[in-house]
Image 1 (cartoon, chains in turn orange, green):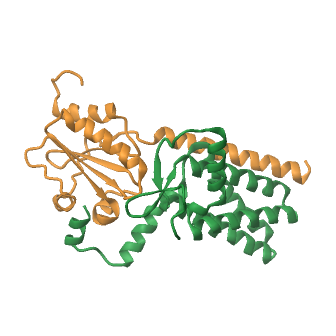
Image 2 (cartoon, each protein chain N blue to C red):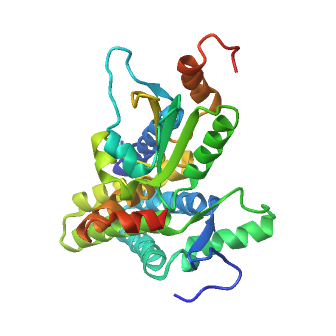
Image 3 (cartoon, rainbow over the protein chains, first blue to last red):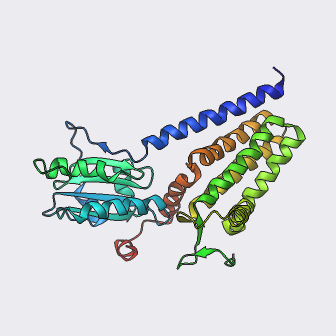
Length: 152
Length: 168
């Protein structure tokens, strides 16, 4: 192979590998990751105070970590508004991740938007990075909130 | 930089850009750097230098003056691509341009020092990231913007509770 053909081959391989990696990443993006049943992680009460999420009397809550310049965060907010509309026991807040470094470090939040879903007892139910599908989040909320109720 | 006519700004005077623009620009960057990496030699280095200037203009003057962004607006008008599906603040993509500038600039320095293999590896890194944005819409530099902001704010000292409350 002449050097030119070799370099052309390498560049094409690079383009293909990067595209494949990106495709895989996009497929993962927004996937709702449920917490393990046996592992109980709680979001610290003072972290919830700091973000202003009051779980008193609530069935579940969510903290959306965003940033002022984050476009996908707006899409996550739309999903949360939709979910809370017919779930009076579900409360959520949106905060700027950069203002809550203690929370982001405790839960290894590396990017925005990240959503942390907790039950009324601060137990972490699930988390997502990217824009989740409303139905996937509803399944998490209704699984613990409305076990015998009709499927939403 | 003074606001530029015909562009959208938010209430705080921050530029809002069409989300399709950075992806269009990344496609051109990918083409320029892929050709540079294949041909190498003086022509390849000249292409890398050209791309570095493009990054520098977008970083220093802002995306309102980005050469590829300006080209995108012309193409958009000519082909009648319609209104933006969404807009975003220029902060993250502009930071991504700065990342491109840093690595492409490092490549030029390596070429000048005679370390051309290392220089072409640096060009390969920029090519990989621009390809990622062009083909899948993932902007790694934009994601890094949050990390950069965090570091900046932390070194500026933590905000007081009252400030955080006011910002909400």
